[in-house]
Length: 148
Image 1 (cartoon, rainbow, N blue to C red):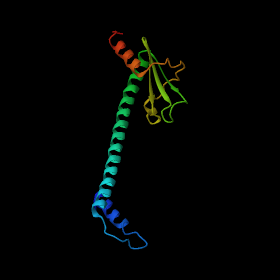
Image 2: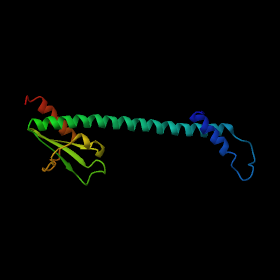
Image 3: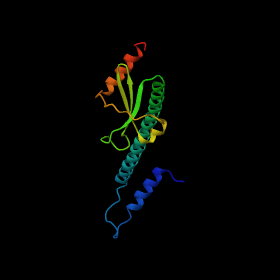
């Protein structure tokens, strides 16, 4: 089986012969190679982007499993935990997990594909308190060091 690079360059060569009339002049093989190299670079960039996207999705899956565990443990310890839908958020990311610690509210947006890891969470009735991601993690750090 031919490599992707061989297929690209063969296709480029075949495309150069797709004229209704025979072109005049000299075929510039250096230019054809440059075009083929540019096509190969674009393909490699796309493949790299796909790998980065897959790695990002894997990181979100791991994070969401941790959030699911934290939510379940927080619920078992008597902390207020719940899920809320925000229709103003991006499609697929409208579900938000909330946990109320003694020192403040925490929240995470969860992709629809991860909802199966949050079975039985009650609806969260309270409003989002406006915390930022930085404030959320400051609250977590403060809670961890509070001894509660």
